[in-house]
Amino acid sequence: MGLPVLILGFSGSGKTTSLRNFGAEELALVNVNGKYLPFRGRFSQQLVSDNTAEISNFIRNSKAKAIAVDDSQYIMVNEFMRRAKETGYQKFTDIGKNFWDLVSLVRTLPEDVIVYFLNHIETGDDGRQKVKTVGKLLDEKTNIEGMFTIVLKTVVMDGKYFFATQTDGADPCKSPMGLFDKILIPNDLRMVDETIRTYYGLVPEHFCADCGAVIMPTSKRSAKELADASTAKFGRILCADCAKALLADSGDTLTQQNFSQQGANAQ
Image (cartoon, rainbow, N blue to C red; front, side):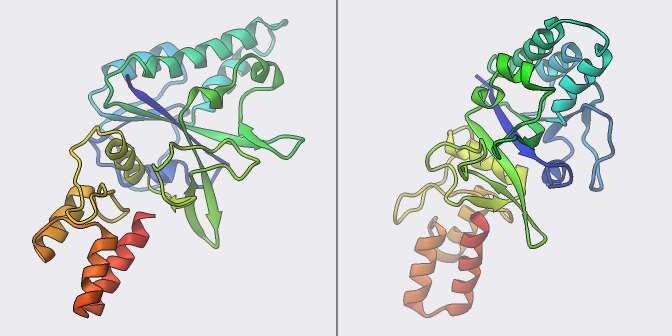
């Protein structure tokens, strides 16, 4: 069973930019509106379409394990605009059903496939934030956030870009217990991708020899790179906390600082 993940944010807050660290072959991109990427490079597998049938076929046949649909709300918006002159409520039912089918499709994929839906967010009259759709009639028919186990939101603070991993009480952010140790993590969807795969055992796991903790990736290194680095330094795999404790005992303050930064990057 594949995993759908929802990434929310206002325009310009870093949703698309978070894809920057994926390799050309690592990610398949559904570019709904055909916009230019906000970073150099491109992905080998790319579809420019807002048609749910074409998108579904692309996702089914993609060889990549990570797929991004950006910006997914335009699948709904563009269909609504094409059918703007239609009267009655049927178009809202159709639009909601088409998007529901697309998210539901992900659950029929192999378990190591993760599909990221990058979607705009909006603030309601009550001050709460929600997925941007095409109006209240559609919202009454489907709860999009409820279809996802993981919902992250872009956050910009002091010129730096992050993902929020848990709700602040006024947004739909959520993630499984223990997946992330911090409320704010780096705006790096590749790191998020490996973290999710490590958490669910979709990639080989590396465990700290001293405390038994699973080695999680950082924005700088994969879990394997961290395991290899600690093995080269200490002769065994260590997590950042155990490595820092060992270095403190040895008085190696410079390397201790490096591991402290490594631990900070993990969050």
